Image 1 (cartoon, rainbow, N blue to C red):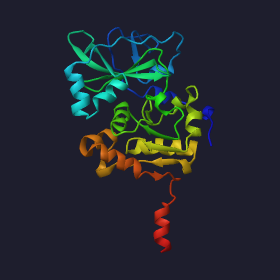
Image 2: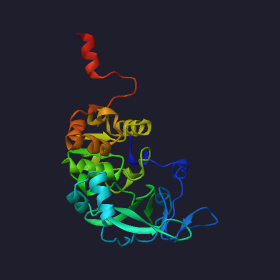
Image 3: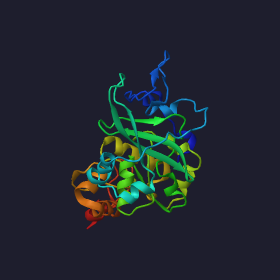
Length: 271
């Protein structure tokens, strides 16, 4: 079993993402982004000396609401409960036109402690400065005996639309477990009886799920694989509805070390 100290973020991970810009962001001579927003996921790699101040959000436009509730099939009450908001940002450095931006707040003990932005037009993502590196949905999993971990905010909202309120999303994509160092996150997962690992069904998601199973133990970690080749929870929700998500969670299999056959396979061979 690993300890929080064993979990870190490599320099390569921090430099892997492309740069996305919004109003007030400039590139310093040392290669660090400065201004109202910083690059994702580099935000957590830099010192957070100043206290976090949430950026104000606007009333959600019909376009953004339609994207979430119609295109992504997220229930409106789930959007409201998670305090999803919107902003506008400049679409280019010349400030010639604006784009709508969805704001996903990181809520810890009822307070907004971070914000992740997702531009509607091209899905560019970044975080606000000085926010905490915590799970989206952190409060949802406190004290839970069964916990679902997904790879994106939209996937977390999809699972909640299907009736699962014990769900949280990693903050920086698959392969970065630095969020485990935030406050008592490691302890919360250690105390859970079951952890459903519902990362994306791709190589990165599989590797991330395996890493978490190694940390918390194979016997309590269950890998969720979605039906009909769907990559993530939202694809399931859009194509198969809430029942598809419930079926995926229900049919999750206990994690196992690479190369070890499933228990079902052993039983079939014995017969």
